[in-house]
Amino acid sequence: MKPVSAKQSTMHSTKQTRLQTATPATTKVDAQAIRQATTLAATLNDYARLAEARLPAEVWHYLQEGAGEGRTQRENEAAFNTMKLVPRPLADVRGGHTRIELFGRTHVHPLMLAPMAYQRLFDTHGESGSAMAAQAQQAVMLVSSLASQPLAQIAACGADLWFQLYWQAGRDATLRLLRKAELAGAQAIVFTVDAPVKQASLQLPAGITAANLEDAPELPAIAAGQSAVFDQWMMLAPGWDDLAWLRAQTTLPLLVKGLLNVDDARRALALGCDGLIVSNHGGRVIDGTTTALQALIAMREQLGEQVTLLFDSGVRSGADAYKAIACGAQAVLIGRPYIWALAAAGPMGVAHLIRRLRDELEMTMALMGQSTIAGIRATGMA
Ligand SMILES: Cc1cc2nc3c(=O)[nH]c(=O)nc-3n(C[C@H](O)[C@H](O)[C@H](O)COP(=O)(O)O)c2cc1C
Image 1 (spheres, rainbow, N blue to C red):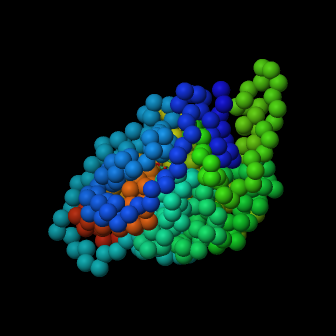
Image 2: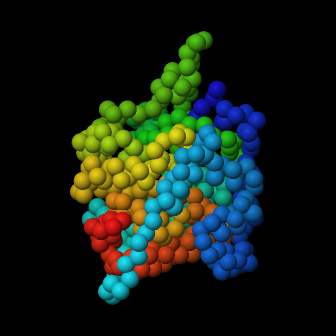
Image 3: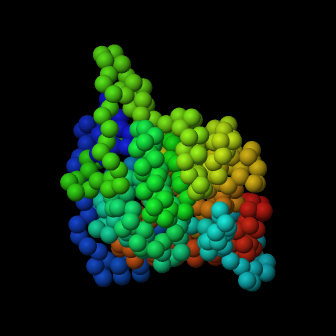
């Protein structure tokens, strides 16, 4: 068995037969592809179809795959489908808007781009393409520790950037990465804790690396009978004392992504973390977890209204974003769908997709009789 951690820039699968070397996206999106995507893509799933047609099969598989049999991944989406909206027409929603306040900043809408690794696999513009779209559509972009372009290049696009931090095997290397993110102008740090070890099926192609990371550390040697998981990979994983240490290293807002247990959430908040991103990593780490939406409902109920909760995993429409907000999310991260748009039509595709989702959210709000995000939060799914 050969698991991997988030620190590693190449990945190995336990299912060796599926291990494939990826081909990066090399065909530049042209005007026709952009026109096709932005005129024909009526839903986010249309973007998925266009992306699948453009991407090498192994890259498409890497993007889409969920852990195990993909049950959690499917259930994330099903959780939204089974939750039904009851429209409230005739309400006066004039002057409505989607503005939110987070950490002292105003954002014109609550849709953000989730951290997604190695975006040069999907389009030659890579993370910069997504950042350009975020800038154009006033969306916050969360840049992954596994970004395939230098942070300075991504930051030069002018979008509001948050940095997603993966633990770098030890405090010194983690601190150096944190400082790079601060220097690049990150407005918040998102510490992802749910994937210290995971399976994957992609061998990165030559030329695509985690551009902001140092060389992967040597794994500790293991003796016969020892476990590659416990005695090797998990030796490099962070613990609660590391989270406490991390909190003390930055004055930026610090959010933790990937906690699903309410007691763990309370503990992180007690350590001084500023908020949580409720997520099960899109069902990519463990097959069989609670759906992210169920976790969000539990967190909001038990942690109260004052705690900052953001959400991702399974959002596929503006109506889904509405439901997540009604269940307690202050902002909603878009994951795989914006990578579909990036692959289908480059930065223009991502910008189009963000605008489409925002339009869908606004229309859902209008038909639900809600004129503000705060109003949705106060009303819930009633
Ligand atoms: C291809 C891919 C790469 C990802 N890379 C990261 C990453 O580098 N850091 C991270 O915190 N989450 C990462 N995620 C998880 C996303 O941030 C997000 O939690 C997930 O995609 C949400 O599920 P959804 O895409 O089904 O909506 C990745 C997900 C995918 C599909």
